[in-house]
Image (tube, rainbow, N blue to C red; front, top):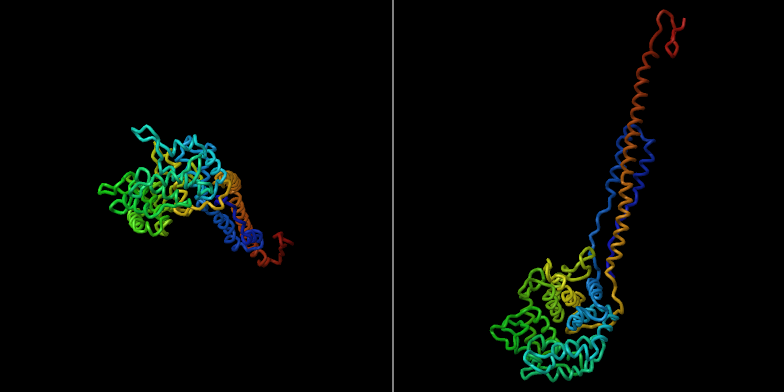
Amino acid sequence: MVYRRLRRRRLPEDPLALGKVRQLRHLSGRLLAAAAVVPITVFASAAPAEAQEAPFAQPAQAAASWLVGQSDGTSWNAGDVSSSLDAVIALEAARVGGDQVQATLEWLNSNETLTPYVFTTADGATEPVLNAGPAGKVMYTVATAGGDATNFGEIRLADQVTGSQTANGTYGDGTAPTTAWAVLGLSRTDTPAGAEAAAGLAAVQCPDGGFNYADVDGGDDCVSDPDTTGLVVSALATLGDAGAAPLASAVAWLEGAQAEDGGFDNGFGENANSTAMAAQAFLATGKADAAERAVAFLIGLQFDCTGEQPGAIMYTDPEDPEFGEASRLLATAQAIVPIAGQDLAALDATGIEAKVPGTDCESADAGGDATAEADGDEGSTSWLPWVIGAAVVVLVALVIAFALKSRKGKAGAAPAEDATPADGESTDADGTDKQ
């Protein structure tokens, strides 16, 4: 559900004021002059105040509505699998758009589409090898939707990912993001990762407690970033006690990296993606205050019904004039997860609705037109109270003038009535002498 913008409405007329208008003719001249001001005062104070309401009662669903609108029907970003998976995870988190989720997973569930994504050829290599990070991300997305993540797109993903674990416990290329997605994907199967994976993530942890997207040894040159750290925190949260020590250090680093306004900076300014990954990590670890601040920052980046793309989340505010539009898709998809109150460690799509509720911006626009029309009608008759008031003033002035004139006339006639006729002459009421 979303808030609909409130239409301005005309306040009911004050019956007390109207009663006073009707009773004007019965008042004395002095009271009439005072009472004539009442209708003008009442009408002048009857203008309704502007209502200031948040544009979306459910910001995650509003963002999901925009997100679905960017799909070509099956995928996003011209068939980019990674972007499409992010979008599906977002819809699962918002628990809307089940039909879209199904359509995208059906598109992905083919060897032709899936194989080039999970089996890639490294520079200088001749044969493609499993990319454990993307494979884990597919498993995670499919399993969250209720599908079989162990055998999808004619690929036994769980077996492939499990077999890619290295000697130090990491997966695939040994980086933190790859290992984190492998752990998250396996967490949704009957053979989740164990203590070896926790040790592997600890081995690539930066000295300050955070994680870097490309580091493979956790050396002194390791520079932590919030995006990778947030992802790894959720992966560690699925490992239980085995991941407790590196988890605590990673969360502490995130808490220290959060800006006063709740946002996170990945080295290029505070942005939606970094903040979203940190926010969902806070939710996964019960850091409610930090999560609330981060989510508030994200909602502050959302276009409202008057914006360029209602429901979408900006990467930064202001947006980059060259890359702003292109960055909205991923920013919106990643932001939806924590805005919906979910995290990657425990994301639950149970009860997902088939359709996506609209932002209601169309209704708001229609309401705005109706409001404008109503305001126009109000404006076209706004002169009426003043005319009535002016008429009352004129009427009162005439009544007072008439009363004063009558009183003056009576005062001038009094001496003639009291005068004594001279020499025995008599005078009629009209002053005609009688002999």
